[in-house]
Image (cartoon, rainbow, N blue to C red):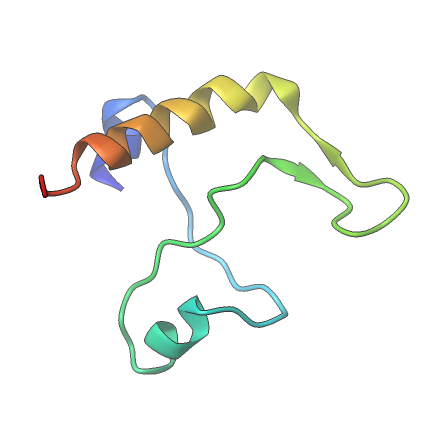
Length: 72
């Protein structure tokens, strides 16, 4: 969340249906960052869309996350 704040925005928390690898970690109380995809709506429906205007911010966050990974 600090990296998002550094970039001038706030990450929220949320819950979604479905299943994924993150469910295993979250089930035991480990905080999980999931959902680094595009911002939009209508998932898996005819009106599914992304907000192109949000793409630069999401990409910047992904770059910062990668920069923070330990070397090696």
